Structure formats: structure tokens, C-alpha cells
Image (cartoon, rainbow, N blue to C red; front, side):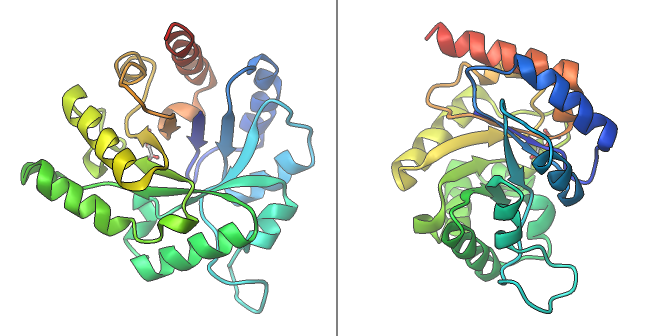
Length: 230
Ligand code: PGA
């Protein structure tokens, strides 16, 4: 699967282009996670070839909480997935809050994508330190459907993990959690060739490149090609 995380970027023009382009997106699960207002746009326009995901959700149910967007609202907007604990948010969210979000999202039948990842300094401490950091970020497995491994030092930097390291981490996370494991961080039309060949990755979480539809298309096609040849 391919999950596109627009972050706080994109506009109605891009939404329209995605709707047009998506007629070519067949035989591969694609989830578009735009900012909240554009979820509303997609919800009112038929989007047969992709699913909708949210970049976050409230830990609360409907009520007098200014600025919050609840899982019930996401469900009403035809959202099927929700990203929780992205590193852009972990700066002001602790594990307790993340756990509450996972729990409430599952109650509303959303597929939860839990993001985890280590900083460069933890990476420099070696594989054991990395794994123990990642395990600490996963402590609500029962409410988590997909784990997105996104090393902080790879997000938006153009850097990607070494093949052996990534293969090792994916394997360990699979053994530990028995969940789908996807990778995110600097995926583009070039890096996807190497990344899609890594064994047992269940998909990719794509940030910046998902805002450029011709590049996203290249990524989707390379990924599809490599998957079908296996
Ligand atoms: P990037 O972001 O693809 O722009 O590196 C990935 C992410 O933060 O999910």
C-alpha cells in the first residue's frame, strides 16, 4: 500500500488533480491523507480508486473542545485510516495521548497507522539502542493496525536507511508486533527503486513526493512493477 501524507500542504487545485489522476490508480491500495478541510472536499466527490486517511485525530469524543476533530467526524467524512504519532506531532504528544488516540480511533473502526522512528543520535548508538527506542514507542499494540517506521533523520532530508539496517528493523518489528510494517522517509522516484526491493515491507508512507503527482505516479508504477515481479 501507498499512503500519501500531505502534511499542512496542498490546495483545492491539487485535490481536483488527484481526482482526475486517480482513474489510473488501479490494483494498488492508495490512501490520501490531506489536511482536514480537503477531507471534506474528497468526501463530497467520488473517489473510487483511493481511500481517505487523516493525519491525526482528537483523543476526545464530540464535545466542547475548540479546534479538535473527532474520529466520529472522520468516519462521517469517509475516512478509513488515521495516522497517529507522526514525528511532527510527537514533539507535543506523549505516549499516553497517542495511546488514547489509538484506542478511540479503533472504537470508530478506523485503521490506525502508528508512526515510530529514532533520532540520528540514537541511530549512532547502534541497532540495539534503535530497537529499544522503537519498542518504547509501541505500547498499545492491540489498537494498532499498521506500524510506519519513519526514522527522524530520513524525513525530508533525502537520506534513506542502509538496506541491511532497514531489512533488520522491518524484520524485528514484524516479529515483535505481528503487524503490517510500512516505511516512510525521503521516498521519491529514485529511492523507491531500492526501497521497494526490501523484503517484507508492506508499503510506504510518502510525504513531500506525494504532492507532486507525476512523481507519485512514477513511485506507484515502480512499486507495482517490483511487487508483481516477485
Ligand atoms: P518525506 O516525509 O517523504 O517528505 O520525507 C515522510 C513523512 O514524514 O511521513
